[in-house]
Amino acid sequence: MNEANAPTGTAAAAGPAGPAGSAGPAELAAPAGPAGFVGAADTRPLPARAPRVHYAWVVAGVALVVLLGSAGFRSTPSLMMDALHTEFGWSMGTISSATSVNLTLYGLTAPFAAALMDRFGVRLMVVCALLTISVGSGLTMLMREPWQLVLCWGVLVGLGSGSMAGAFATTITGRWFRARQGLVTGVLTAAGAAGNLVFLPLGAWLVEEHGWRSAVVVVSLAASAVAVPVLLLMRERPADLGLLPYGATEPPPVPAADGRALARSLRVLRDAARTRAFWLLAASFAICGATTAGLVGTHFIPAAHDHGLPVTTAASLLALIGVFDVIGTVASGWFTDRFDAGRLLVLYYALRGLSLLLLPQLFAGSLEPPILAFVIFYGLDWVATVPPTVALCRQYFGEDAPIVFGWVLACHQIGAAVVAGLAGVARDRLGDYDLAWYLAGGLCAVAVLLCLALRTPGRTDRAVPALI
Image 1 (cartoon, rainbow, N blue to C red):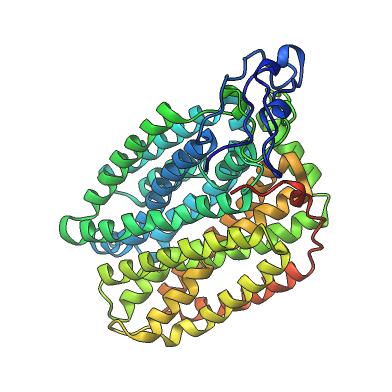
Image 2 (cartoon, rainbow, N blue to C red; image 1 turned 180 degrees about the vertical axis):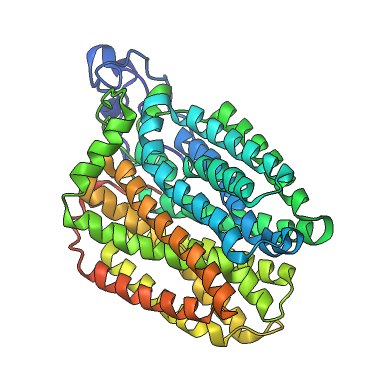
């Protein structure tokens, strides 16, 4: 992580060039505008000496903490479904409707959040999002009617978590990294799984021992606590510190000042929607959401409980899926830097569909090897689709990629929302989730066909030198 490619000052600080594949101080000290500063309108001087650790890794670390917490906050409703059903007598379909609203707003907020981050800054947007989650979760303790669950957990927590969705990770990697973008995207995406590792077992224990209200109190306090490192350590762009993005050998273009975040989000959608690639990515990612957050993330715990597994055991299995998701998603980021992203998606959806088709035969009233095999196999594939999807957005849509990915993610969450609601209704009507698992497996086959129809553009990112 020693940084050899950050600018080291003005031309007076020039020194010998570094080894092949990295730029020496003299090369990077060359001014991009008057007075040797980065960007045509940036008058901040460059530091006299490059830091040993590029600040991009600090920003990535803060983003990791934010995404860890955000994932844990989103996982809580699945833990409360049986408890809410028992206390209030609400049907699974009614409770799932709040989750559907949450997932829908989570997705629809993402593209606007990306544009708002460009307009008002990442730090302000993330802090406001965390406080919104804190308020929404805290108010849940006072609810007595289903509409209050929809308002608190569906609307407020959905808006807050959506502001820290995939567009946030895409914005961070796009601004701060030129090398290792796929790997960092994979690590940040895997934070969702790692968050489940902490919150699912803890939340299940709290619900079991102290009631569901204790779990939402913990979420509310944790969301407020996560805002602290964002306020203290988050920075907007490398130029704010006189740095180049990690792995860059020349300053990035000066971002255009555009005060119309809403208009920009809609303009990018209009332009992207004219391309075949956008619709193929959006449709396949909608299926991704339907077969992960919508079905497994929302209904795996109650489905396992239907077969006799305690809620705490089922939650631990879902958390274990997260363990292997961390491995699979980080590996997927590494693969995305090296292999064709479209082909990776074909492989991921095919394997996921196979595992979901087999799942109804694997449930049992106790922990058995078959369900553990599913946890491992499915976990490795859980959100491995994100790094190659982000990479394809970058390759097709360039600087608009964070907003385009926000819209693609909106489709992901709409797919998740539809299936979360329909699976709850199917459980109420049929008495089990079997049909939902089989249909999800069939949807993955459709996603394979969609990804086969993608024509991957040339890999322009290969021109960026790889840094150790």
